[in-house]
Length: 201
Image 1 (cartoon, rainbow, N blue to C red):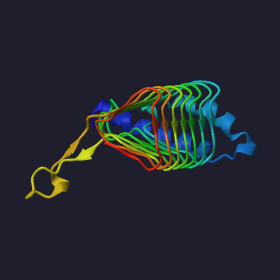
Image 2 (image 1 turned 90 degrees about the horizontal axis):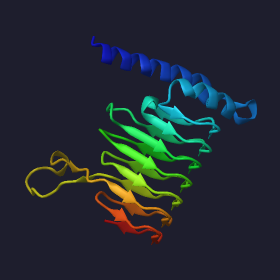
Image 3 (image 1 turned 120 degrees about the horizontal axis):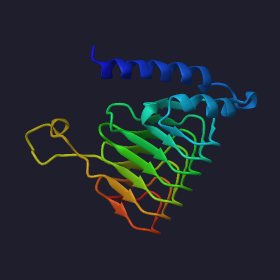
């Protein structure tokens, strides 16, 4: 077994132990304070103070950076596994509401800048890079997907034609309404308001 592979497995075991022991301690029993201290040993960066409720799932913590004043609520899943260059970065005072799913796939950077609010049940997925600027508001049930299926060949099944990974940029001070879907290759300009249910392609 190569040293890098061994280190990666050892890191994963450490991550599982720390998140299992600390991850479900209730808020009333000082859970957020204990997580704030204990998670420092496994995350790429975690500033203070950070508020992480119980029931949050983290994978690939060595590739996750969390700024100060960040709130992460129950049911959130962040997954940065799969490639050594994957990165999830949450800037200062970002709030991630319940049941948000943030996932890298392969060589992906997801960057959410400071003072941005992500409402419940939002999905943010690579494999393309995703940059969300400062002071943005992403309403509930929105989806930000930095990939798209190729389908140019009518004979070959779509699932075998590969995907695009151009990436998505949402500039500062944008508001995405309820149920907005943002697809690969899109840039949303500064100060934009996207109406509920829109598909941005």
